[in-house]
Length: 166
Image (tube, rainbow, N blue to C red; front, side, top):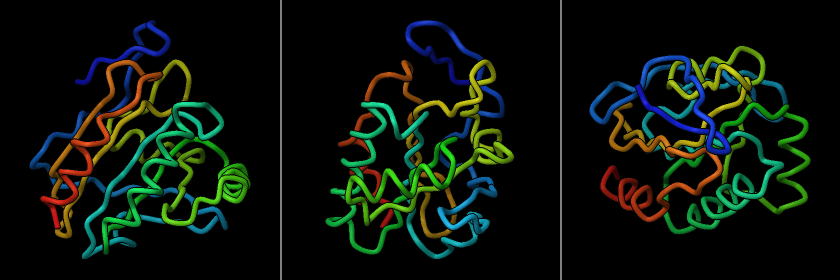
């Protein structure tokens, strides 16, 4: 299981760690309009899944902005940002930030994604910072569980993994 810290304090992750080569687990999250979204909604597409604790924090905001910018160069790749933020807050934040190339999805209701991908922080009911790349056949081709939740992910490695998954 991945071992991470949050503000340098160890935390417990709920769920199984996802590894390269695994079949991507299904999940059920909410879109900004409160409709349910599952992995199947992105079938036949390469997916970059950016996981953040909350869009209303500096590193999470920067991470989402960075992947929004990168999305314009990636072609037919679906870029998802998943957090525990309420769908209304995600929609407001995206509007204020001009985020148009990323689907922001909320795991607040069931923590379905967090449990399925091993990123649910038990003590905080937030998601740990992570990045997953899933190919068009739903095989996981890249994972990064960021060891300190307040640090940035390795953007270059994630983008390179997307390019290889195409």
